[in-house]
Image (cartoon, rainbow, N blue to C red; front, top):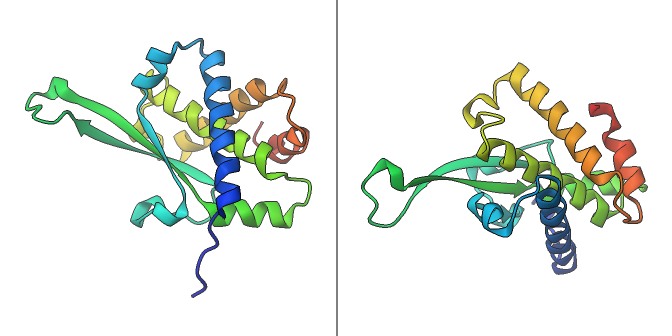
Length: 172
């Protein structure tokens, strides 16, 4: 079995930039203050740090939800939702290699915005996390999130973003 391709240090810097852009775009769209944004606790992982169910074939990224409890928190009120955005480096790099019109930065911005919208929707109960994996529900949720992502990104002035929007147009 071939070893999966992972992001280089330069590509990781591009991902970091993409996530910062995505956070700003999503928080502006939902009119969230930095305090509200921090309540949506999440982490970003790339393939080299993923294990087990965090690794998937096909999608460029996925959001996994967990319950976390404050240290020494015995009561249920100390429980909070925590999410991990699992970037699948190999899928992303394969898609950008196969489709020369996809530039890494705008492609990663789109993916990051998309996954952060899922987190906002789960955190604000617009979508129930446990129901998000049911086939029909998942397909409908993906369509909704792609539509919101496209709406947020349409006005973004990043070279190559138009090609990314065309690539994901099939979901609308």
